[in-house]
Image (cartoon, rainbow, N blue to C red; front, side):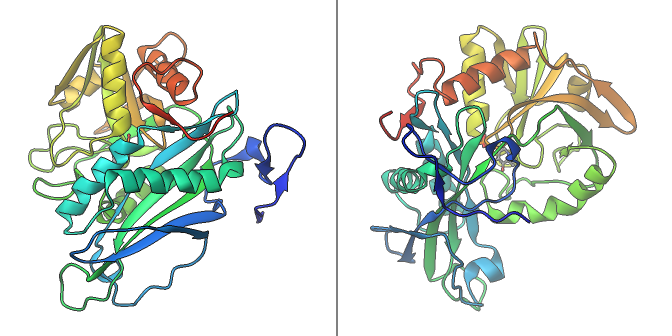
Length: 351
Ligand SMILES: *Cc1c(COP(=O)(O)O)cnc(C)c1O
């Protein structure tokens, strides 16, 4: 196993980098040196947090997060531009989503300004962990958890907001192979599928593991109420392309409101595609020209095939596709290679 140090290599040139083999980045944890942490009591507000070295947490065995899963995660990325700037993509959207999730899970949440400031501080303290342009990004993981002790089921008396980071490469180097299956569901009406609750993920480990063992990249989940409509994959939203029409399931409490999803809708509209947020049936997916997934981790990733009840549909991927056109535009904005006239990127430093 390779071990990583915060040692800075390279000097006298414009950037210094941590000692990482940037060409081999995957999606495994390489903890960046610093994390941001702040606590607050229930009924109070978060105040001034602080950066500390990335380290283990000391946590009460009776903490709300350990016993009752009271917690939220967020995810966003910092990218380095060719001219050495470091960009965040729409961090206030993550802040807003955490706030909505916190409300649903009866937790206090950092204000939008506090959230964005914590992310900024974390990235700036870990600048040399932001990969060189074209090699990947610094993945940022904010967490909000019930950290105080609670025995009787209910909200914790104390909360911790923290932000850590890790450099990552592309999650899927190729297109995805999805499978639709009837037996497991990701979210239920009235549940927490519409927020990034920590409790949404481990219940699908088993079906995902089964799907992977038979050669699929992920499951395309159907709605739990009727089993007729496509919702999304385990951690990314889904779109179809048919002619000039781009469709994605309309948001409801069983679908996570992805920031990539929202951005792709705007980019597609700016390219004059017709965009529909609707109920998408299995048949619509099978009938599409292209299918793609969106999310911070996957970016825009083409779907090569969808399999349902043993029937496999294949889709166009690669050069010349609508998916590729949308992917390239979003990536160009996020990496600063085209002008961002939508105000989506936040520059953290001067080149
Ligand atoms: C995080 C997540 C997404 C994608 O959201 P982005 O804001 O685009 O990263 C989609 N679906 C689920 C279930 C998720 O957890």
